[in-house]
Image (cartoon, rainbow, N blue to C red; front, side, top):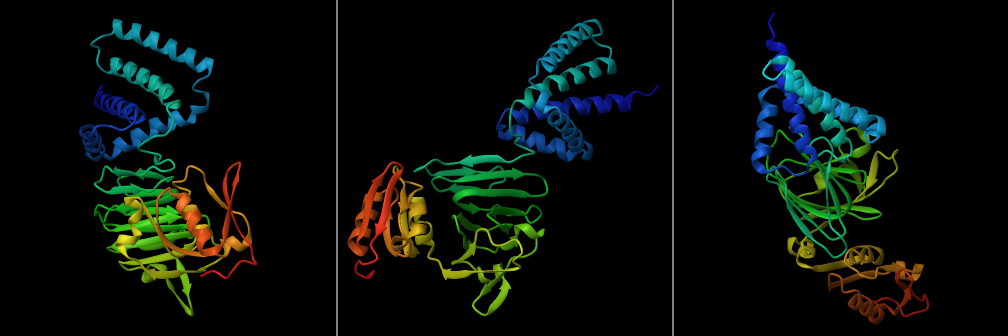
Length: 357
């Protein structure tokens, strides 16, 4: 009887189980990443074997820590150990036992290990007042502002990132066959090789392009280009966004809206990247936007206390985290009053105060 196919399948299962275990351990060394990619590229069936194993783990993940499964694991290990000792050197039968034991042990271990680096996003984040630069495994670079969360999931076909909070700059390694996309709110920014930043505020998404070209898609329309209204014009959003320009879109437009309002403005690269150097530059920004950006660095967060303060627009340069300087500037320019509350500093402006300068 020809046992080659059985042997080949078992070898593949063993190898897939080994890689699955390494993926659950965290970041692999660069050498192992190359070896892993070479194994995937060597045979289309390898990726399928890996997905089958991981799928089996996920299918029983809920029960992995139960007493019954743990007892089954221990019994399987003991039985496999005794059988392998008796049948050492017997070829396919030994491989079958070894593979079965490996898969069982690994699925139990992985079920409690959490996220999967290869199949689910990896999270990069910064705390309040913290900035971070991350080198991604394709050569791209990710620069995170304070209080920011970015999730990253790479496959052989694409590179997907999600900005869940804050602001980040992306320097994309060129690879036309693997598009690089960043989702923020309901907007998706797609690039191949370029440099841009995306900021997610409560009400807006800001996209600044430094070099190259990007395409903007509607997250809720299966990859349809985002159409925007700028004055009397209606056109694709990415036509407005060239190097040195900033595009501002609503973060969460109505799902039924096929056209959303947009604003576009020139962007000075030095000013727009000042946050990487610890400075926050505001040019005719709403106080809500100023407060939201300053709070990424503030030990005591700011809040807007009334409509009079909310209507203010602010220009100025402040050191990141220097809320005292901001409060003093608002008091001098706009008669804004600051009150200490249990959760931070609340800003008020009396409607009878002198008109804003």
